[in-house]
Image 1 (cartoon, rainbow, N blue to C red):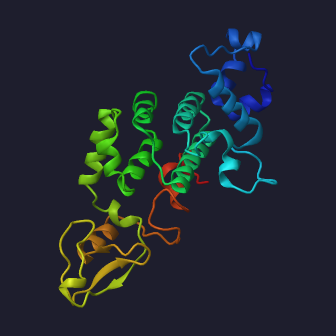
Image 2: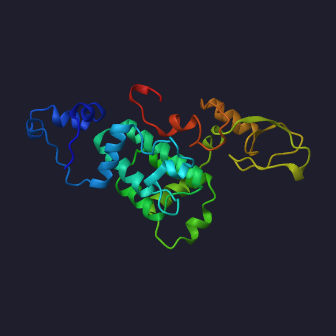
Image 3: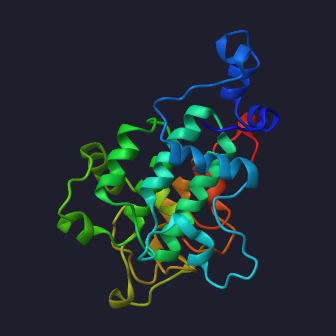
Length: 264
């Protein structure tokens, strides 16, 4: 059993607000039973509810791993399964701010440890979390943009088949999405040996012809693909956090959910 302040609970969760403020049994005896939920995951929900965070206070702590506390295992690796289970709970409780916080936390942990979820994590992601969740988009991006080919090929455990299918589709259809995360500048290769292939359409870029190249990661794009990107209304990034869509200001617009179009 958990004793929780009603005002705090109902203000954060429309699910609990409907249950505790209604005329059904839950509202009359002020008790909500959640037999399908894991107590340890619900404790993480309560930590966020009372502190607004999933990490330890930074006072006197010198390392990021210490601040992350139980979000990492004894080897310092992120407990992605914990964050995925908590996201599924948050989704059911309709606590969108917590869901967004989990997404940002997972992205930060992946970047700081240069790691991605495991095969068993993909089963949680695809069996327990709704299809339209931005968290799926984040995990697919992590695998698409990081060097994960050997991991996918050699891991002894089985990946969720839908995850593999969606990852293949994403890798085969780079399109405008391959451009929108970059900070482009004019570029003209002097000879074939210094040229590159367009990251979007894969065409080899001709020397002495105007093209575009990212100022951060050095990837190149043909003018045709860049113009198509502009015609489709895709805004090029202005922050310099790099070309990773889960970093900087891109995280909110790409992976967070907001009521009535509001942003973080």
